[in-house]
Length: 137
Image 1 (tube, rainbow, N blue to C red):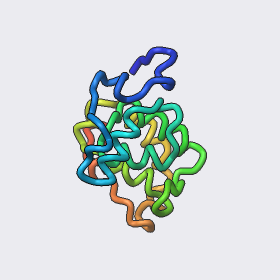
Image 2: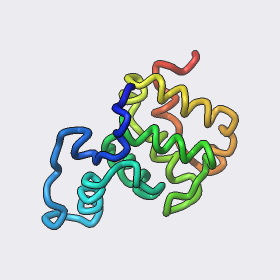
Image 3: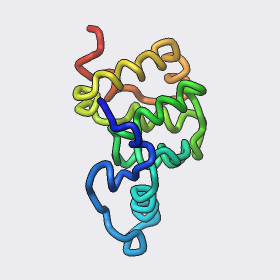
Image 4: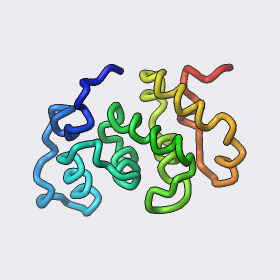
């Protein structure tokens, strides 16, 4: 996907042209945090911020490339909860996302293809990712 040069300086609210509301009116801390993060530039997201937002399926088009950059340094990066929590949230994304985003699928596949045993050992499921139409049968 082709983005504008300055997309990292924009919030998900601006990039997706959607206002998720006021975080102070949120029913839970997780919803509050997601709304807060939707209002800050995506380029400032930490690994933990990416884990949260990807886990909640927010802004995947913009956040997956940022997560890939972090995972290239350490596939099993601990983004707050446990070792591998960021890659796990990515691999749990619905099959439909992967079916519609071949470039991202290829990049993630390149990262994990030689790490399958470690994914199994860490009990990180890959079923949604592996059921994509891009998996070589």
